[in-house]
Image (cartoon, rainbow, N blue to C red):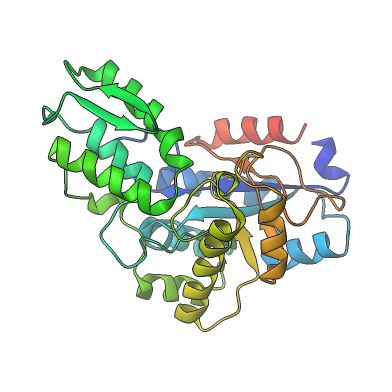
Length: 310
């Protein structure tokens, strides 16, 4: 607790609030646990408003005691359907970073599509091999263990690919496994849901690229297109100037000096990364750290939060 008492803030990173049958990347928090977590924060911490988080970082001010900030990445429909009502019931605010490439469609985000095709599919593939980035995957005699191994090996390769190439290869993989129907439970927000989310006092909207690549794997122009496209689309939908951005994936390998220059040139004021550390008045406002939250009950959440900040 001492760290937060000395004027720092723990910025928490969520992705989903839902009841899911599968969650191989452990990105989902159930509505019950999310409500328990916010109840704990309400009793034991100060959940800062996003404008105040920005103000303190801009002006290098000390944060209130036991300060916590809430953020969400990606833009799943459940952010609006499940997370927002719980936030509103606790009178708390979160910053929602939205990837725009699948907005207003039934398509899954690309990592969810890979999960559906490989892990949740008992079909025998039409071919014995799948090639990606000079690596050949053996698709013969697939059991649960082998499917999970292929899945975990594919994700980092897709993560670094240019969006068009990645989408083509995932479509090839889907056809090979005859797995073409996305899951309604994994859809992104519609335009209307995004507008309603933005209208709530419990939500602030930021950009999160268009097709959710690892920006550090792209050249300057590719990064610029990804970041600017997402900002332009969101500003057009919401008729509002966006000043917040977060790097997809967000580790130090997922952005570089070019990324930060682009963010500054596009007039973003505050940019989130994803590596575990507290935020204080000396944190870099263009890649501040966050703590990833898992599906913890209140006791587990309390223990994890205390571990984060000590």
